[in-house]
Image (tube, rainbow, N blue to C red; front, side, top):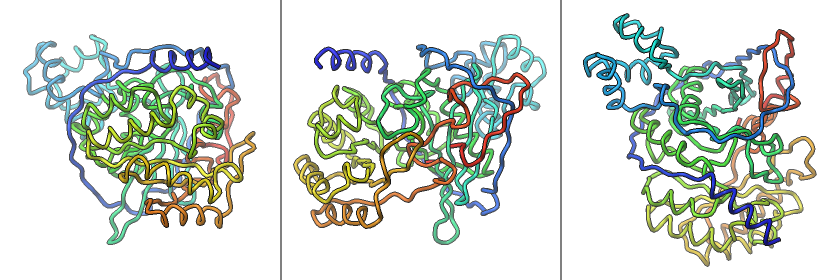
Length: 428
């Protein structure tokens, strides 16, 4: 047991990085219901074995997406142009959402040619497939430069007075190494961390599909954000400064990786930290979340309390309700006692389990869910039951997985036509 725990801790520590980040502002726009119309497009696929996990740099120096305006100005000067050309680049990438250098039509041809010959590219990946659920949620598959597929989800919400909120549920890794027992992503294996621009482009792709600005971003897609913290924070800065999404509209989730909550707190962000708890005690949590052996519940709670003290931002706890496992009133009482012991600045998101193929876990009945929530509320713990979105398209939380491929991480085009069932393609 000690050897396994030591190895797990070593693996987690080897993958963690951090960088500073700026503050944010936000805008809201309206969205017609027709903007969420179904859009399904496919290319040929072949099931192949995914590559072995590799460690990749968090930034591609030849990719323009993710660069700040000052960095783009410096690049323009480096290539023999006036600094203001960098501002034009910034506008083309983040406002016009140009997908390739050839689309920079209002730049001098000599500048465009120099960019291409110097190996620079925008860094936008093609949308490989989209699948739309009846509730308007749209799941996208993006095909990366190395043929790996990643998933991202657009979730529209119609508010009062006709204002619509559009949330992007983004991935931070290709697959996930933590293998939580109830989650589909981990069952597909792990390939690599996403680079900065590969995270950012998911938001732009969702805006392309919905023809609407993304107002909220949640790092709750494929992967563990804290195991790719440097890329996540760099992407966070860009989403704020360049795409103009407010800090308070961004949520970074984690199942818990030693020392990373402290690192995140040190940046004093105004974004929400969402911790996937799923159990009120250590022994049960280890059964549901194997990586919990490396990060005791008491240590997580201490770090969450410190996070609040450092940022003055309330921590949200995600709790997947598994029928007959962690959904009893007794579990709720124990959870309430745990949270009250460590403070009052918490909120609990209750997530009725979304069934996945090959799992023995079951979705609890509505009566059990409401009883659990009532037990928390009666003990002064604020809780809400998350509305399931995209369930019939295998797109709800915990189901971000390429179900239409035997080996879900790699795409390959070889001329063979293989069209997946839309109901099997995987939203948040």
